[in-house]
Length: 216
Image (cartoon, rainbow, N blue to C red; front, side, top):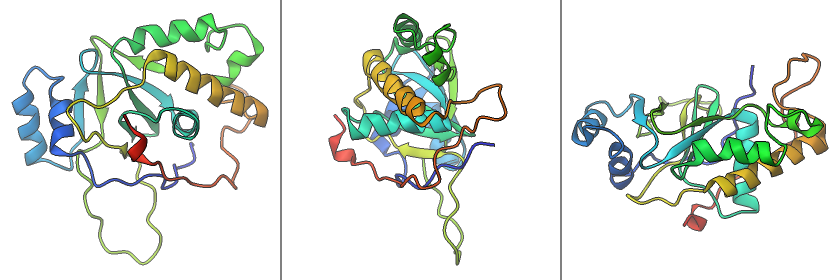
């Protein structure tokens, strides 16, 4: 079981401009927008390859990649969590290029090098693929007395423009290598067949808030 993500960045939901960008990937954009209006709390299936590709990473490793992008890099494009996975929206072509770059740098999950074991298999969705993303809107929860439990599926960085900036394969390669090196330093490999190795981050890891003003 993957440790739930902490409350790192909470947004009100996808804006109308962002929704138009997401809907533009479908054959019938108006139908997608109508579905969003009728069922704002329902997940949405999006086609990849035209407006964006998606890098689908395990939650812990994806979180480390996102940290690198915001702490040391240019920020990120839209990002969501869905059923325990991190979905990082990327420039079209990333699905084909990123795995090749990882293999070239000997960080690919299929490589024989010792360091390759610190990079879990990344599912890259491109032309011909589709992904399911969280509902466009954040539905207000019922009143509660205790702290809010982390949502399983939600937008961490919601699209808010018709032309969002998207990281290139080279930028995501950099983020993945930085995340892998971080895991190597901690000597905590990502999901491994060896049950004795923990895949969880340290318990004292502080939550962060991403400054979306840095997004391009």
